[in-house]
Image 1: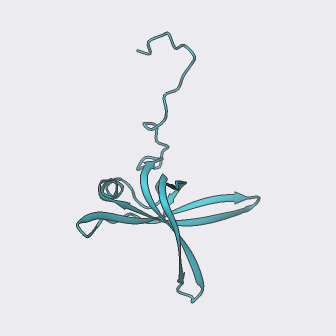
Image 2 (image 1 turned 180 degrees about the vertical axis):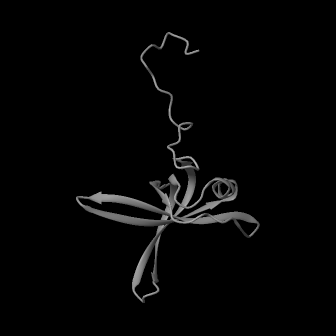
Image 3 (image 1 turned 120 degrees about the vertical axis):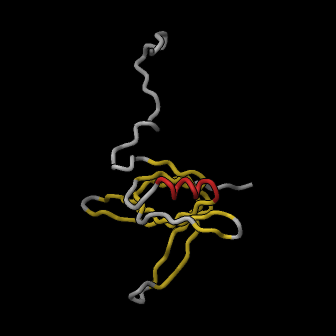
Length: 126
């Protein structure tokens, strides 16, 4: 048995839209992952597909520009020709989990942060 898992962190390039496909809910959205190499910034775009309940949640809470972590599988590439007639490639990923990393107003999410430990394990925190 083989399994592949990919984790990406980036910003949504568009607001996801929910649609039906063969009696299942589905959405696709793009995620821009930025990497700095010296003074240069390289952006890699991923096309992410989410299904059923995950698709509904993504469409309900996410919009263009939001920062997300996507845990996905089934990474694949597809070739296409852009508007200028240039050959391009697309990275596509099926989401298993999507974690929202900021709030709707752009603040870092505090609810998803792991509890902090101050070393006083014997004390009750309330």
